[in-house]
Image (tube, rainbow, N blue to C red; front, top):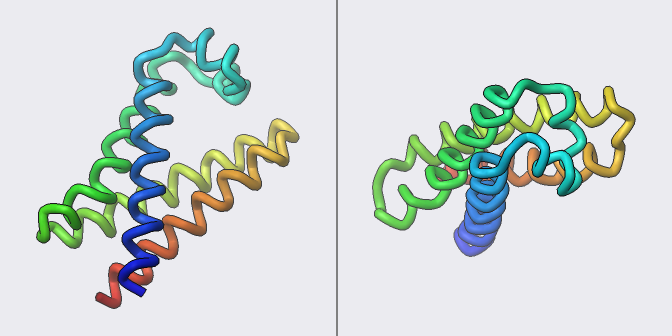
Amino acid sequence: MAIALWIVQGLLGLIFVITGSFKFFQSKEKVIASGGTWAEDFAPGIIKAIAGAELICGLLVIVPRLLGHGHRLTIIAAVSIAAIMAGAIYTHIRRREHQHAMINAVFLLMALFVIVVSHKS
């Protein structure tokens, strides 16, 4: 189970660091143009806040495990990712973007896996 946890944590962290960084350092218009049509519903500051949270949580999902301590930070980051993904799923369903909602549901399940397995170890 430890190997599966490492794999899921690594993927989840990498995905959120990359996507969070992209959204954080790009304008609202570039986020929308790259397929993030959800951003049409949000002010630029909110988009930056979401992106910053994704970036920080992506780092905190993997860095504590790499350092060998800070186990609780990993769980807090995974809970935060799950909350962000729940909001993303709601937004995509409201916008009738069901394919994007399904992708976010996979990320939500990955975060829940990290929470459950990390909590047991």
